[in-house]
Image (cartoon, rainbow, N blue to C red; front, side):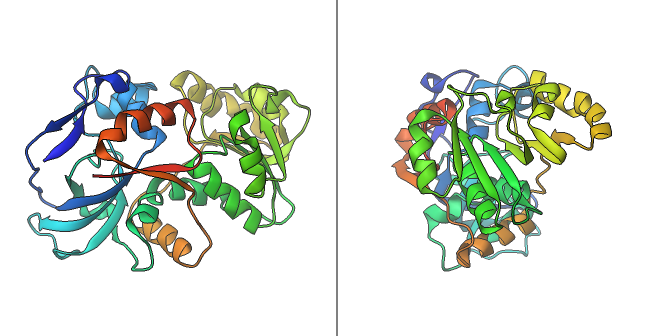
Length: 317
């Protein structure tokens, strides 16, 4: 089968289109013919081996798994031993970030991570939902009308869906991203926009009671300045050097009634089914910039790593 493979950590130039054996499903796995696979920032992290947690999961010195791509939509092609959840021919979707494999014509995936795709969703839209949609749902849980909500990195897949959900909840949304996305984010409904290259939201003098940070770079002291009393800050990702101080250093701000920590996303079938149903009901619509062939994976990852994508890119093997 055709696949985009990596044999070392580094940039997109190390990726290559190759013929590799079709995988065989193990116990509690199914094999799917991949119909679509979204490109995520997590793919970029596993490509370059940074932050450190990417290597802790993906292999310390070299990748344990050759094929990236975790938000998979596919048709069940073969069942592993003892699998009863799905049948051959079922169209399924899920986030398999721990093992990946979606940038290929076939992938073996855990049944625990997969859900059936609602008939109302096309392959490309369904592929945008499991990881990015799950982050958006978890990151906006509990928002109320009038909440001041800031999204740092608002122009990506998770950010744009979080923006939708926040506006639907009645929150006042500040969107932070690069200059090329500012007007676009306004058109999506952002109440305020900040070009992070021109202004640091944490030192702007403004305060928010909810902050969702897609890539953490600031220490807890800086973040606390931007939080109102009773505020909640959650980081989705970032370098370990930034995340550890947030998790442990943020504890001291509990005494100021400010909660600083990481976003815990309960990934798996239940969340994927919930996000898919929200898309069916029109509560969540991913912004799909382009659908690309397998050969475009290196460029798609490069643009994703640079933060250059408006919404999502999807690969159709």
